[in-house]
Amino acid sequence: MSSLFKSEIGKKEILALYEQKLNDLAIQYENKRIDTIYGKTNIIVVGDSTKPPILLIHGSNGCAPIALETYPTLYTKFQVFAIDVLAQPNKSAETRLSMKDNSYGLWINDLIDKLELKNVTMAGFSFGGLIILKTLIDNETNIKEVYLSAPAFIVNGNPLAALFKIFIPMKRYMKTQNNKYLQKFLNTLFTEKDEFAHKYLSKVFLNFKMDFTPVPVIKRGEAKLINTPITIIGAKNDIMFPGVKMLKRAHKIFPSLKNTVLFENSKHVQNKNDNRKIEKLILKE
Picture 1 (cartoon, rainbow, N blue to C red):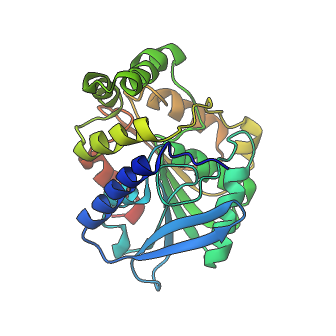
Picture 2: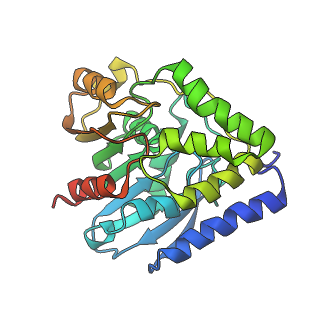
């Protein structure tokens, strides 16, 4: 199988930024590599094993250190397992799974079994939300509660708006390496400026084969079968997964919906203040 990284040099540059972010967090952690049905999965574990487990699932083109930075104090009440998602620019296997079936759910449940975890809380952003919902559809036995922030898989935004404001600027940056196109992409998706995202994505867009498969939406019948308590956080100005539309559908299809939050001034990627609010929800502060 050919690598998703376009070159060894590009891979080294991306993973160097990964290590830089992890080091900048200045946390004590353990690195685990778990053999799963779809290949080796890299996990960064933070916190005391006597505390209840929480799995953090990052979004597309992301990595575990970004998830840890987003919710930095969860370790005070949880043992945190930050997962490097398969086939993303990180340290896990490059096995690209289908979003149309339950492969992602099978993968996460296999991981939970291998780690011998029970009563697991899960928190995921964007594409991480899709992965969590697929996990619940596959087998929710070991899942206690989930928190989905601007999740994929519930609704999609206007495809024309996404084309002109997200995908065309991305493609133009990939072709020209002109920073103005990358900045346009970031301005569309990020609520506040993120220097690391700029550095990281500038390398990812040029050096990694991304998945441009359209994101499906969960079927009403699948949603109805989920019993796990779900909290969904939507963003009003999210062009990818519009918050108002998302929460409206969520109330209709999820019988186990426990709580919803709409950030009025947020784009797809929340700012630090809103991420702290999400973290407090998870910590039940």
